[in-house]
Image (tube, rainbow, N blue to C red; front, side, top):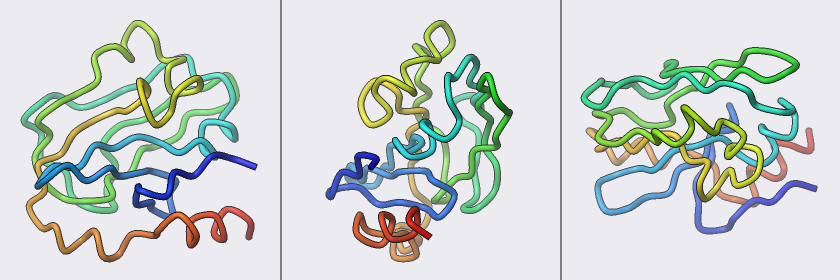
Length: 127
């Protein structure tokens, strides 16, 4: 059973969102990192890049596969987790803490309403 923090929002593509004012800190869920296996590379966009909800913003490469990352909200990237460049395994060891990927200044906070809460995400991963 994967860890699903109650205070976060989730996408059906297995990204999590931590809302911090008008910003959204984004990463992949414990479920996703477990399914992917050992992550060996994370490709992220540069600060200043505009992202749109449900469109790809990067990818993660594991020993098993390469998987696209989908933005759960639209906006401008204001922070990128540079630590993942040298230590992509942080996504495996601490997906909700040190393994976060980007921070987006949201252009439409209403998009958060389309995301899942912890209970709905847990039910989604059980399907």
